Image 1 (cartoon, one colour):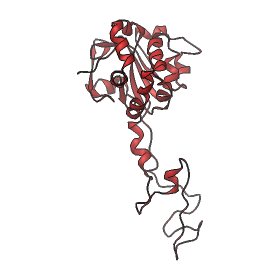
Image 2: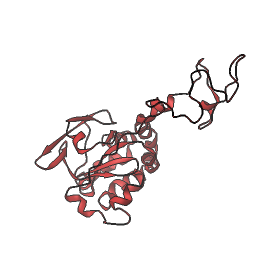
Image 3: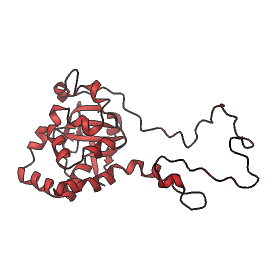
Image 4: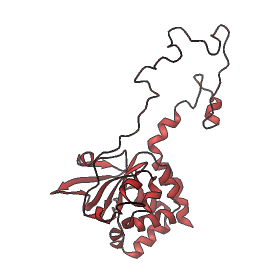
Length: 241
């Protein structure tokens, strides 16, 4: 039951990438709160002041209806680009070639659902389910996840794993240490240290033809899901402290 409480801190961390966007437009220019800020998706209709153009009439200097809007406007915020590299590594052989769990099928699935369909990530998927985190992972936006495979979890002593599962703060730290903001390509990862949502950093380097995250080897990646980029690793990463 305690692990279910984890969803609040983890959801807060995973929603960091969209917090600034949701804050825009929350207040009116006069500092008051508009109707659109109180009702998600609602459009606040302003009351025209005396002498202002009537609704539907173009204001001076504004483009006429049907004309293209200027490029580069703030509303044209593009999401984090999806890496185009195909997944590679010895662990990719375990992915189904078609159907559930295949590369093509995973690309259309949100992260929490996708984890449950990758055979080598069944333990991680079970941890997410027991922690009531599937919906949180499904709604996260543009993240990169270093996903420990089943063999990586087997390296963790059972008493330590039980302690993580029974302590929402420790489990939150552990899981968010495996998550990075933005969808990272292998070239992005090779730039060195990368900050995680836990607050600490991981060190990524290439040794021969293998990417390593701290001491864990990347066995397959990048795997694209609908909202995240996944790299399967062979060990559980442990935050410092």
